[in-house]
Length: 111
Image (cartoon, rainbow, N blue to C red; front, side, top):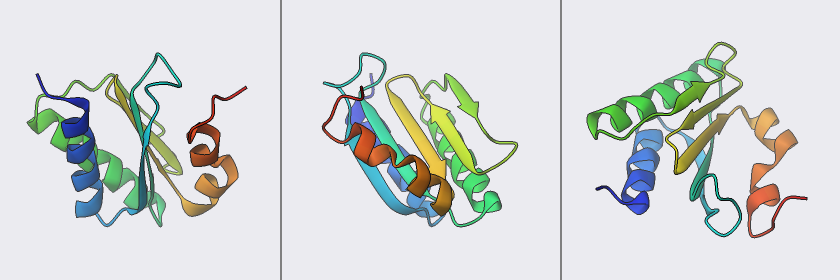
């Protein structure tokens, strides 16, 4: 079975391949029973956000990593790729700044 660290590495590599920016991997194991890791990445256009998400899903499929769901592909402002234990958020810069997921999840339990 593939470890969560390996899954995260595959996702980060897929994001880097399509020039994703400001890639942050957060360990949420102690914060949520829903998933162990969360990755946040910026794409500079709707097209790039969609391409980043597509590349992550393709790499997951190649490596037999289950994809629970993909949300937000239509708009392309914020696409979420959920593989169960790992959730990847890919956002436009203004969306990422507005929601600021890193502050919400980085070492603090949300209230």
